[in-house]
Image (cartoon, rainbow, N blue to C red; front, side, top):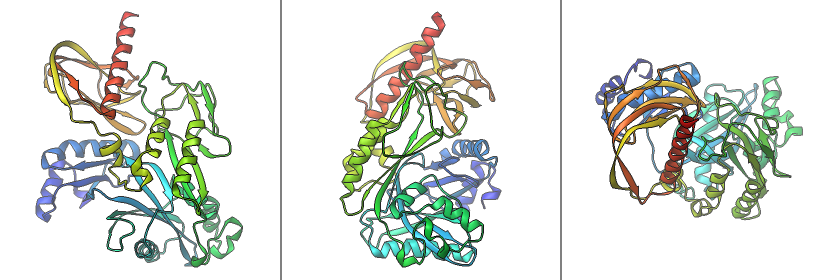
Amino acid sequence: PGDSFKSGADVAAWMKRENVPFPVMLKAASGGGGRGMRVVRAEGELDGAFARCASEAATAFGDDRVFVEEFVEGAKHLEVQVLFDQHGNGVHLLERDCSVQRRNQKVVEWAPARGICPELRETLTSSSLDLARAVDYANAGTVEFLVRGALDDPSSKASFVEVNPRIQVEHTVTELACGIDLVRAQLRVARGAKLSELGDLGTFWPQNAVKAERWALQCRVSLLPPTKPEHGSDLTSYSEPAGTRVDAAGNPWAPGMTPSTLYDPLMAKLCVDASIDQPFQSLLDKTVEAVDAYDIGGVHTNLEEHKRILEHPMIQNDSVTTKFLEEVLDAPEPVQRGKAIDVTEKPLPSPSAGAVVAVLKQPGDAVEVGECVVVVSAMKLEMEVKSAVDGIVDAVFVKPGDQVQQAEALATTSGISYEVLRTGPAAVQRLERRAGLEDKLAGDAKA
């Protein structure tokens, strides 16, 4: 039914016919990497979510088709690496845990999954192999699942998500865990080699010889929008931690380079491994040391966030789900509105350099706190620029298609703003970011 969806109204009508309950996930038909995906919890959210999902999908993949699937909450995201040759031989290379993610984009991954019971592993791996054989698959690929329940519980339910018929960003942890070269293996298989002929690249055959030799973990080091005056667009320093695998997009990066905001924000993959005979905590400790030793100056990255993740008790005791970042690390404390403040022509700054995708309000329109005014696309993701006042839109300075700079004023609003009391870490970061952008706008105006 996905091909017939042209609007949120089409989705609503289909859900009523099929008696599909909320919440659901809207997902780009040609998507990947968390782009073109939106969770919808009520019918009133469908139109806006569908528009943003389709627009983001068209920008990232050149295909605005959207389909609907069940939204599974409170689950772990596990995926099975498979490799099939052109002669009908196939193996799984165990599983990866990719539960640490934001907006459906993976942030930290490790292999193998911790404490997974033999029954659940068998369910995931045998299902993956059966699926690949059913379509005569010949390549490296990943079969993804959401698992509800504890990994050591044989009764935990696994739901199939999708197959990625390619090497994925997180293939590195499988390589380190199993002691293999998966990229070269994929190329050799494409040239006709049998799995039994890949011994020089590691153990791929037979299946019972494939084992996890080490713990392995990957941190995706990515650009973030600036939040401080010292955050610019050019690298002022760059140094990778000694003795640690770093797969860097800059190959390597160097001072003076300017990471592009037109593509994925991923700068590098920090990959760390440790003996499988040691507690998983030893891997976490080793990764924290590598994060501390990784120097990227001049731009804003998520290195500090990685340290917060790695040192969090829920990571250490393996209780994270796909909602960990959103509901725990990023979760604001209960917020209360403080004193009302009259504001005039309050600027709405762009959170990043990028392109204007949509202008949802025009001068004279009424607007409420948190209501989207402009949508900006940066690094293939769409960001909603929202009003901070209850009032009206005074002016809009951009139109769809315009290229804008970070901190550029997109619109102004006047009305009532409110002091915010008792905020959590994520809210504090947003306030600091907004304050920094507004200070920059004020400075530019004086200049």
